[in-house]
Each structure stands twice: as structure tokens, then as C-alpha cells.
Length: 123
Image (cartoon, rainbow, N blue to C red; front, side, top):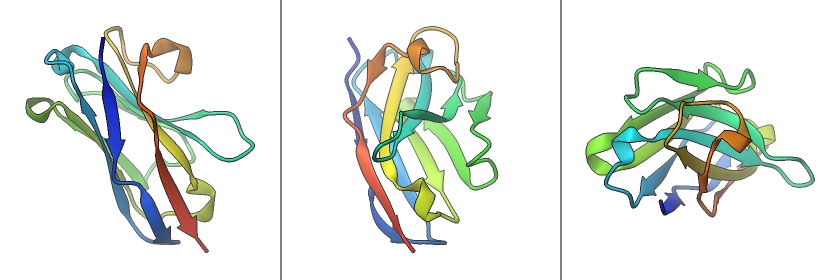
């Protein structure tokens, strides 16, 4: 079982930056594929970004490419999502996800999920 805890959400103005973090309980964090998903009010949860266990491969949704950066620090069991040039449409609850399998953009490909952290971008 892997416990995931997100932090770092908050309120920011459009054009601003925010970094959210996800800490995993498992000491085998370095063997987990990790991803970020988000869910806006009234919408389905959607893929944001993903990173392979080594950090060598990263994937992004088209809507965040060039603005968001996913990274991980395996020594700290932590994954990050640096969000720059934020837009009001980025407002959502951001979820951290993990899986011992291969990295994927697909929600069903992740076995473990955090509780989410709210990110609100004001116009």
C-alpha cells in the first residue's frame, strides 16, 4: 500500500506560479511511475503530467505543455509539479497518482491516489 499526500495548493492570480508536491510513504518510491491529474468543478478528472520512475521520461497534456514542469526527487520520496503562467482554467483539485507499472497518461493505469490539493487561479 502506498500513501500519497499532496500539498502546496492555494490561491494565485492569473499569470502567477505555484508548486504542488506529493510525498509518498513507500520506500520503493523510486520504482513507481507517478502522475498528476486534475478535476475542475463539474468536469471529469483529466491527465496533467506524468513521470517515469527514473525521471527520465515526462509527459504532459497539451493544455499545460510549456507552462508546467513535472519532476521527482527519489531520495525524498517526493514528486513536484511546477506551474507557471497559470490561467483561470487551471483551477481544479490536483491529484497525485502512483503505480508500480509503466508510466501512462491513463487514469486507470494508476493504482494509488492522494486526496488532492485545491489550486485556484483568479482572473
